[in-house]
Length: 84
Length: 234
Image (cartoon, rainbow over the protein chains, first blue to last red):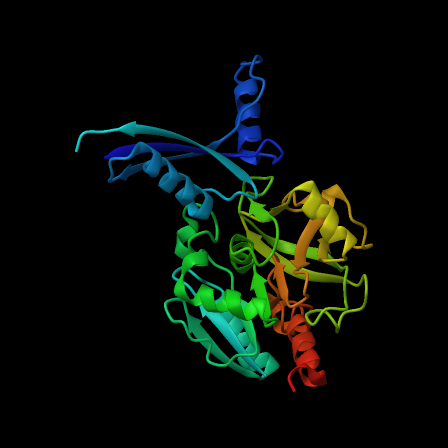
């Protein structure tokens, strides 16, 4: 069994209105050293299987078909093997 | 002419669209249930506004995989007329029938207000009863209506004259102040390359009779009817 930890964020070229709002809020709290804030989504998937490579291929397929919108988003996948 | 209104779990403008076609346009209309795979021989499909599947993940992302959408996508690819309004526009971009995507409004708020639009293209089946560059008033009601696309896509839309509606002021000028949601180039509606699929964030079905404050939206539907009767339907 695998656990995939997926992080989805807007591409750099897409303005992130939520990130900008949080950035402004942090600045108003005095955190002047904050350079940039990007908001995103966190998805965890438990996947049956034994082959890490196959699991990664499956997860990436899920990301490109449904979990992320390739027009505006990019994603990162972290895969860890877990005990059943 | 026969219209079909798609109904997803969470659609909330489906009845308004049905009423608009049935009572005001006085043409045939039927609902198209999301779990069905039958288009009932319709000539034009309306993908209405709402919160299909709760807008979970991304607006329109789950609706796009419902059984009826397979038929809708095939219908559109064959040149069938499709009008996507608000959440319907989001679903059409998620389906790949229209380019780009819609993200959260610049204000991060749900906005329900009248907007002024400039008709940028009156040579489409959806806009033939407007004059070119006419300023019309149609309300928006959305939280995720900021139109974005990569530069290449945006340049292509502009070059090919596929931006159909743009947010403007009373003089018809396109300014940042009259952009309600942060859409790139003030884009409120676009059409596909073949010219048979229109997506727009404003709600034409909500301003289709004088008692509701205006009739500018009705003309999208009368344009479709005129286009159909003018030969496309024969």
